[in-house]
Image (tube, rainbow, N blue to C red; front, side, top):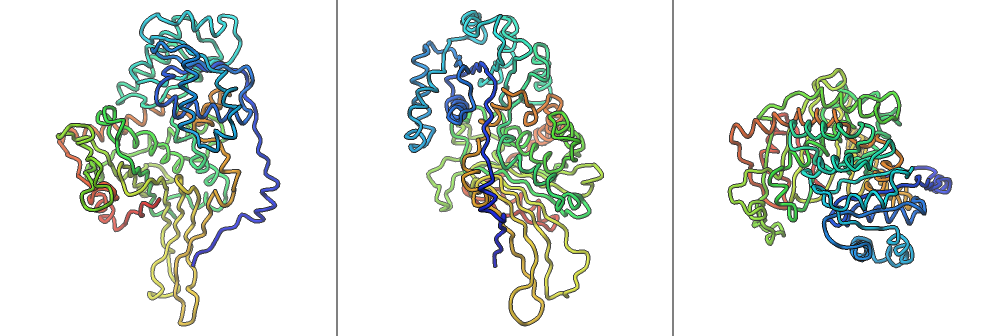
Length: 511
């Protein structure tokens, strides 16, 4: 039996929904690394969609900057090809004229982040020092260039009170490097000007975590250790490290995913209600969660590394992790699972199980909140044990499922079964969810507006590394080697043992 959760009256509600697009103010956006993969695949497609939505003012300018000697016309040709590859055929077919209008916004300058070449030309292009516009410098480059770029922007007097810089992760490699980066940025920019971007926080469903928690009286009274047995957070990827092998082998799943993406999901699930939906109020509550995390015991950690799928899982042409990174002795983890505890009044005694990995059976990001059994069953042993489960699906098939207990239909006594109250965002909201901005669209426009709610603060980054570093140092000192697991599986068997020791099981990884 399956119960469908209707958003009633859905048809009438949809008629009343108004999609509002509020244009941002005039701005100049300089993308350092403007010819790179991130700019071509994410940043510029996001800006193009906001252009098509009418959100970019006519005089908004976008400047690509990189070391290549390209010229503005050459850059427009490069981005035209990139957009045609990234956008769907139908999208390009219906927006052909808009594509040319968007490309007309683009300019290009050859700039060396570590030399003087191109900086005077950039200053002239931006109309400085008399320009009075929002000015965004997007660091779409490797972390080694963050500090040199900040220095150059300051040295050439390109910054003022309306200047913002966007820094992509990783925000350091450990606590020491994160502190050094924060000191460098703080030496030239106020914290209110620094936007540390984690695209996960821009996802519609990730933001919905706050709406689910703080917009529904149904859940908040139960959102504590008295009623919640445990919480599972899973971010599974079906792809390997192809194309990122050099970076990934120096980072691993703990630094690449656990320290930021899963940490942010943990914070949103566990944080106290902020006084208001304000950047510093929200980020302050997230920081409290990170600082309340207990050190993780060695036997509460599982590391894994994917092997090739030689067991008939349908992926036997895939290389193993070590083959991909071309290091037969690599001890970098492509999978990590751990059990965490938060030492505060709300969550004392409630375990949080976090796992993430590459080359798993499916791509899936999901949060499962397991509620405790009823304190006393009036139905007898034959009815079985039943507990409520709230599942928040972040990707794909975004939605919410609440498992509730009902009587099984038919005669023969009181037999209980669990059925889901299921709400798919796509079904409930239809075109409204299909047309919602993606993560980069939302985050870039937030930068232009000066809204830091969905961006990480410097002390938050440092607190996350302060919790992560001892975990990494521990397995390094012990000489731990990741457990192999088959590509296309759910991860190493030791992760299942981690749960079974607590008489629990992981929820399945479903697409």
